[in-house]
Image (tube, rainbow, N blue to C red):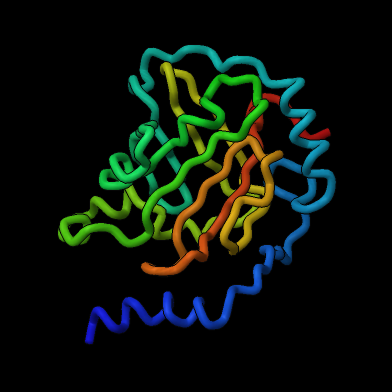
Length: 201
């Protein structure tokens, strides 16, 4: 019975393919200024020109880390050729796309499960290492990546549901499954920002 319920969304979306709808916000502007849906490409270009390599901070942890304050994610990023190796523990960073500190030619792409293994749910592990709450992220929410003891800050500016990434102009793309067995994904797109200087003028 339980297995049948888990398979129901997969069966449904094979018969009725998803109609992709972008996220729409009712608010105007973000906490850092700028508009959610106007000139996103121009804003990204401005960021590329103005943001330099963040200073190294010895108090930051070594390794690659992802922090999303709004949904409580605090986890290490793992970049493996086989995504399944990383996804068993948390967030996978695609080795074929951008890395923190790159020249922004390609976005950083991060993926994680929403629904993990049974042992995930026996503790609070899932809260910190899964994208269960990724759909709660809205334009203006912040995302941080730590690498080489440097911190990069990103601002969510758009999101959608669908089967494929549609915005490769973003500096950061996060995604996860919508249902346990379904091709539908939740996507969130973010731009690199400089918290010390306006990058949206």
